[in-house]
Image (cartoon, rainbow, N blue to C red):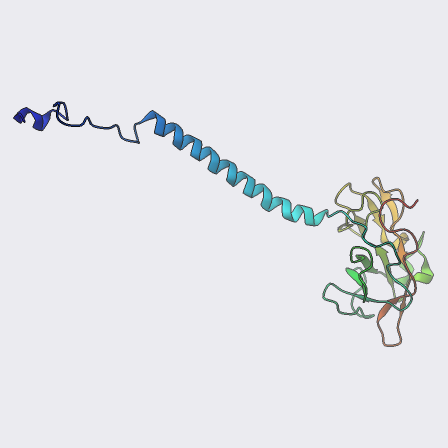
Length: 210
């Protein structure tokens, strides 16, 4: 081998030519770009998925899975932890999502329990169905079946299509597309101080039923 081969960078016939680096090869550059695009796409889908989960929870559409009565006379109201609601559970102006005990009824029968001064109620409120300033309404919007989970001041608001209901006037419609009020649940206090229903909702739960 010639001494010149020490400086010829592989130009001698008996040595392999130098391969291009992957950092300068155009094909490798394209592969890196494609890989970056894949990572960006996966990252974007992950972000969208993380946002979609709470959004679906916010606007979860009611699914009818039971056709019988939801409440009946003497069925106690319980909170999300299964604790019975007492006369002191809410202060005036507060609200709480409650459920029937012991049976779940329709899709767990989410019910909005509100409390206001007795003289705040009027309009379409069924006063004989209130007790101690408490009134209760189905939480299922009568327009598309979403959960009525927002408020504007004292107005109940459905986040799907912004149906609005007045809880001091029998949950009558005061804005948006719902065709009718949220059905009211008749209430009383049991002898041991718990809120109980005296019957079922005074109207169909969810969309339809006009």
